[in-house]
Length: 335
Image 1 (tube, one colour):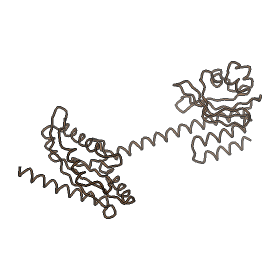
Image 2 (cartoon, rainbow, N blue to C red; image 1 turned 180 degrees about the horizontal axis):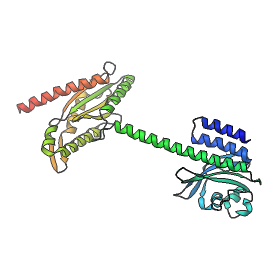
Image 3 (tube, one colour; image 1 turned 135 degrees about the horizontal axis):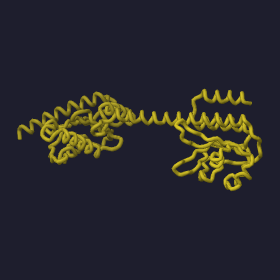
Image 4 (cartoon, rainbow, N blue to C red; image 1 turned 120 degrees about the vertical axis):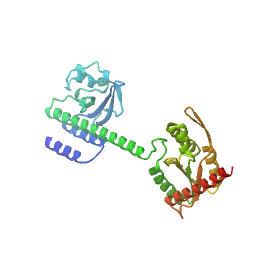
């Protein structure tokens, strides 16, 4: 039997699988070795002092339900661990005061604590029966082995989860403008490609606006770089406030921003352009400095994604922005 179990364990570990899949296979093998009616893994929550049955296998009349919780202080496992008596076939008399065990009718109980690599206590791996069974050294060895394997797998899953979180944070950082929190140039280009693909499928159009903040250098020179940074942040917030969740709002770098949205035929380019003008110009409170900003140069195009790609749309909007800048300069000189 031990050779068969070891062969099955080796086969199980050779395949990549979840913690649940691993534990369920180990519980099945544990039942074969111990001949107990129920085998189960528990987790102890130290903050709530509750013991939770995480996974269970029941092959007889006795049922240990998954998801069941009970106070750790009242559990059979705690009594066994505290007294260092990890096997007992007289539970009904030895721990007669344990209501949970008596209610189920447990007479034979085998358990071992599950400790993680840092020494922290995770929970217990158990086997129990309504029948009286004799102590079996093979059962003890298998129980200890399985508890160790489960602990290692828990640590592995925790490490994988941490790596995934770290990777997600790194990806988010690499796609985010550090100052404004908006999409950066890299993210804008990728998001615009996706927006154009969606618009092609929907047979709709895309408005792309390229924004250059006129006289931004003067704001930095007169009020300081901290005020300049605050100005960029507030511009980003104002642009974000008029766009929906599915639209693109990004900072391309320096004092250049880009916004884009998928549109239906009912939305007019001129109206959207006027909305952007109104949103950017006006009063700004930059720390101790007050600024009335007359507005930015904006180039906007109504792009047909079936005739133009995202890169070409950005170039066209950039060119339109320079025409707008020249027109604003002529008005400023004339006035």
